[in-house]
Amino acid sequence: MLQPIIPLAVSAFTATSALGRGREAHLRALCDARTGLRANDFSLAPLACWVGRVDGVEQAPLPPSQATWECRNNRLAWLGLNQDGFLEAALAARERYGADRVALLLGTSTASIGATEEAYRRLDADGGFPDDMRRPPIHAPHSLAGFLAAALGLEGPCLTLSTACSSSAKVFASAERMIRLGLVDAAVVGGVDTLCESVLFGFNALELVSREPCRPFDRSRTGISIGEAAGFALLERAEAAPEAPRLLGYGEASDAHHMSTPHPEGLGAELALRDALARSGLRPDQVDYINLHGTASLKNDEVEAALIARAFPPSTRASSTKGFTGHTLGAAGILEAVIALLAIGHGLVPGNLGGADPDPACGPQFAWRNEMRPVEVALSNSFGFGGNNACLAFAGPERRA
Image 1 (cartoon, rainbow, N blue to C red):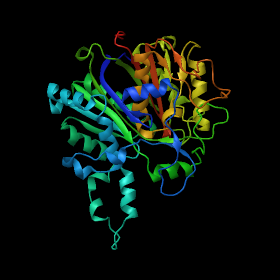
Image 2: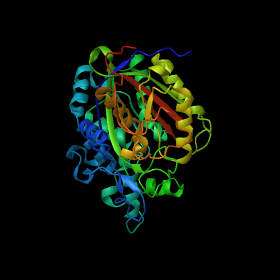
Image 3: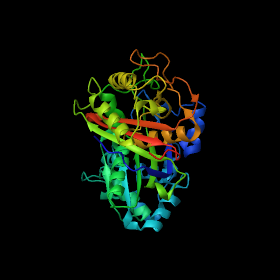
């Protein structure tokens, strides 16, 4: 029997995606049911698909003091950090607790691999990287966390989590454990993933990329649309921010069924979901909204829809928001956690954009159009390749446990 955790305050949070920069831009797009997807204008070689590209990344250079970390992924991280007063909140936490008492826990699927791709495209006559790309820190999975630790001046635990599409959801679980055990007093959590050739053509090789905007949970869905995003949250003990929303709990599981296909009965996903409810002390009928993983791939949506239909009453609302943003891979967990927090803060259940003809596995829980209604408790599902699953539970500040 899992013991309930002590809720943590989400004292600051932000997201940057194809929908725009910051919480207000995301809220407006959700309310307007406006997608951020567009025809692929990113890849060097032609690829007929739609992408969730963030505008302005190319015009957002890093501070001169951080030039060694220069790459698209870290540019997006810096752009995302400078929204909603988040940079100032993180620096204030450093001053409040001490640089060694704030953890930095970040999820990413590909880190700065786009920079390494560029370096290989520009090999010099001797077969080596060009001079301007001979910066070892950006050619490593820890590039994102290394850059942000330097930029924020943090000296506490610094971890990169790379568990595919659950990466930046699992950072919340790691943060809760560190704070509960007294290792740190606060944690900056988040995730960043950017578009790159490896991702676009890799998923295309797996025959998972749709030629049209993705349609999560639609009977005729044809695959995913890949996006990019940066998102961050600051977690502290609840008494530090009594008016902030809460992280009530989390669940993690790995079914290890197949490298790229979920367990046919959603075993790992269900374990993560039930553990999140148990740690939060919640019953299924107390959940108002679930932000689904819902990638618009054939098997993922079928399995997740069946899980929701059997685990929750009709009163619970559920939807995927990847029709708005695309699948942002390692950043999906934090991006959709922010959307869940917006749902709580504004009483908005986002509609399942792109889905017009429901898959037969979908139950009455699905919200196919926006609904304005109170949302006190929201879950966010993130399920990754290899069966790496996570579920987060959030609530408004008035709910203490």
